[in-house]
Image (cartoon, rainbow, N blue to C red):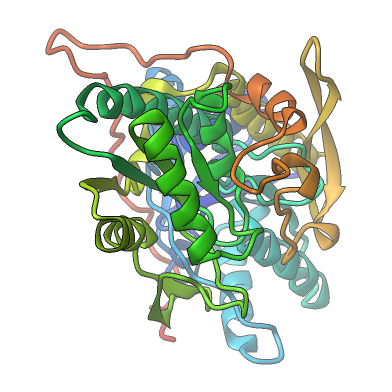
Length: 417
């Protein structure tokens, strides 16, 4: 084994199981006797030379990360520009890696993170620095190509399906004299995977969710209102699940609020309350809406056991791929059987993953456009199976781990953009 250190970092929106991936990364690095560093707030920590030496973490803390949501040492939304646009930031990263003898870099995130890992692998080679970069999959949006599913999605999907089923029972109980229409907004800018997961909450035509609005289908206001009205008249109430990224036929987001985020994505402004207000104004019914927002991606108490296992498997595989010199790859999940559900880890080139998006297949959307097909149900059900609750303390709350480490002493001048 060549000398050097491994650097791990998290990027983008965190999940209920991203720290489980981190736990597996650190445990595997220790098993191989490779020192592991952790960058504070993702790639920004590397640029700022804000690094933690995880050798000071106790084994119990590393194990405890597996049942702790959030990002233990922070994440970020920061997209590296091309080397032609900003060569200095790449040279800075290599300077930091060289100063701390970092030979392996693992970046845990989604599409943009895969792009960052790919760019770094290419630039390190161009600059003559021996660095192996491996992307580690994560996203509740489930929109990474190649991989059958993304760690983080299964738990968010389970939370969504359970929450919709529970809320639907509440609405049904009160519908006679109270709420007639309930709107539940889920994450999903371009891909309707989380919206589809809500479909697991019911099977029959009259069971909630009664309507699911996918970003893959153009929003038709008249058809939507007609369907809601018909469901209320027949069932007595209507539960609607909507993806934040639904669009008009001309491509505009229904809830575009203006402005861009750090990755250049349009800021979305809450389609759930907009649809609820539409139903109230046009149909004259009492409405309620909810936007679970961070709750859907941080609900570790309702994590899928399948998701947890896959999150840890990609972490372990990422370290092993890096140490084997597999530069510019990502460990992906390959489904080998639906029934029984079986899967394996397969490395795939980052060049075929970065900056690509997997949307919901047409065959997964019901013919009327307002629900999921049986094919979609067969795909989703194994991903939400199994329970993996965190340990609970005497106070009745989950015993989450909140590791504290001092930053390593800096060896370079401060970074300035």
